[in-house]
Length: 91
Image (cartoon, rainbow, N blue to C red; front, side):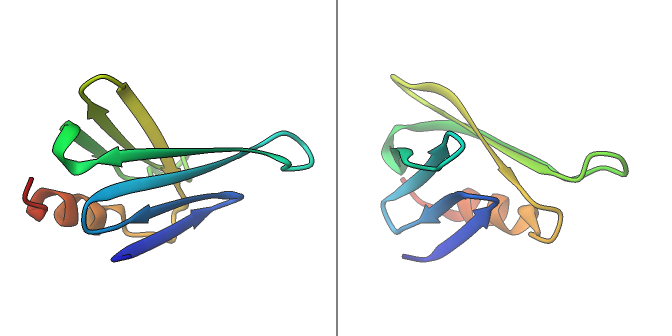
C-alpha cells in the first residue's frame, strides 16, 4: 500500500499495481462493493479540485473494459498529490 484515503464511509487505496476502491452502500453499510483497477488497464484520469461552493474534490479514472469511475474526496485532501502520483506511475 502506497497511499490510502477515506471519504465518509468509502475508501481508496493506491498500491504499487492497482487502485482498490471500497464503496459502502445503504443506510446500515452492510452492502459493500470493492473494485480493482490495475494501472495497466488505465487509459486516462482527471482531477477536479474543490471549489468555493463545492466542498468535494473529484477524481475520475478511465479503464479499458470498465469505462469511467469517479471517486469523491473531502476538501482536506490535496487531490493534486494523487494526480501527480498517478502521472508518475509507470505502466
